[in-house]
Image (cartoon, rainbow, N blue to C red):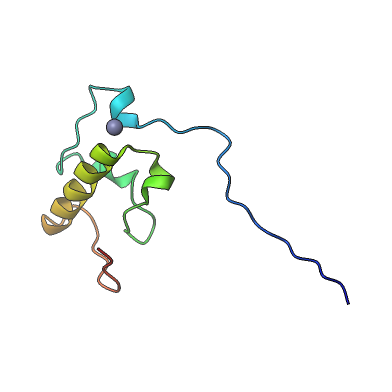
Length: 84
Ligand SMILES: [Zn+2]
C-alpha cells in the first residue's frame, strides 16, 4: 500500500497589488464594462478577492458595479447560485 498524497497548493508566487490602488485613474463604474469583464469568469461570476488581488475597499465597489451592470444587462447574469 502506497500512501501517496499529493497536495495541490494554490500558491501565488507574486504578491498581487490592487489594480485600483496602483492606478488612481482607473475608476470603478458599472458603465465601464470592459474593465468589469476582467473581474468575472467565463460563467459570469465575480472573481474572489484572492483571485483579483484587489483590496477590500475596491473589491466591494467592484462587486457593486458588476451587480449594477448585470441589472443594466451589460454583463451576464448567473441565476444558478447566488452566494452573498
Ligand atoms: Zn484598492
